[in-house]
Length: 104
Image (tube, rainbow, N blue to C red; front, side, top):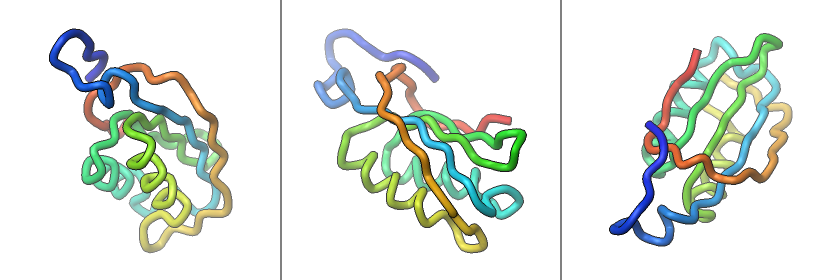
């Protein structure tokens, strides 16, 4: 699930944008990771989502800027049952993930 490069890949795939995010609030035990996975797949976002030990959710996302903006809007809302208090983001260099995963 990592690193695609070389001839035949479009510029959007070769030069994607990326961000990391830490989502705080009532975000564990409400299906946040699974809903996040489905939303990322729907948008064509690559990366991963995982719970943190202190009750937050951490996300790594890569894709086109437009798709990442839509994904970030979704992260700020979360799935039904979640209560998102804050989303801290940081721009990052893409790592070349393909696909999206739920990590433990």
